[in-house]
Image (cartoon, rainbow, N blue to C red):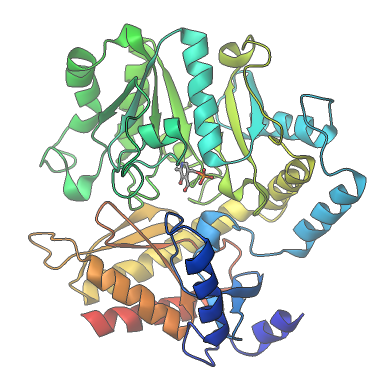
Length: 452
Ligand SMILES: Cc1ncc(COP(=O)(O)O)c(C=O)c1O
């Protein structure tokens, strides 16, 4: 309730330089008892959060441009979501879908098959985390095709379990010291146009990065008959919000169809209206065979899902998929509420117009500050890539670290991303008030000015 009052009064409101004394105490505790393998972006401790506002244990109030890494797209602790959680918890908290049927799981499976691209028949299964959904998508296509190979993209991120990590195209920090990785994984360059791996310019490049799969990977690394699927993020998230040209996924899908393997689209970070469409792959007019989703699906409860073409999953070997907690009733009931709110409140349209507004502002910043080398993304899922020199494009991670520190001290929570850690990415709740967007952007500009 305190926070509601703060929201009305003053946001942001920094009363003691973060991290304040209570945040520092939590930090010490963390340093004592938690492994540094679990990374930390900001040194503050959270007291409570509501909408797009977060208050720390020292009483500082921040605007949240992180949404807990793209999870609370409908804002923190929305009343309707909290009520859904409580009301389902009063009925039953856990059943296990392997023990008995329960409605929230089955309803959600149906809704997910309805709201995902493709008018063909689909089926779904629920899991707990993004990485687990990726694991299961791979199990499904391998079991169905009897083929071991999965082709992934450089600079991608698919999670931290063994298969998901093996599919991840960024070594540091995700793969450091964890080899050997799961066999059967191949990598090909992504359409990172700002730093084109083929040193070409779009559109003269002819989307060589997609054609490279056909021309090279399938000839030099793995034959089509041994490949079960290609997995791709429609916009690379941790990789720095890289959105390929429109033709890219059309070409990738064509190759899958012609060569006889499947396309898995990882919508874990991009799904549920984050990019101005319900699913980012809709920007490309492509229908995936398998989709994995998590994060915003249940407004912060651990839940993920795989939605696949019926033929791929209809005859999966009984007992070979699932898990004790996958599709927890509270999480599934919450996901149904999330979908209802997205549809009822026109969150996709809202996301799209937020995206237009943000892009305009970021492009203006790019005109003013030489250290911004690129502005990119889809909808409001936007990032700025910072460079020391626009010509050489030398990455400037130090500037990003300073901008993040400075923004925190002014009352804004931000995230970074990118192969070189030199991108500031925006992940505000899609329901954020205009006023807070403006204030957040002012803080970002003031922080950029300090390092320019
Ligand atoms: C595209 C993508 N795939 C997979 C994952 C892994 O999800 P989780 O952290 O829930 O395992 C993430 C998480 O950031 C992601 O962004």
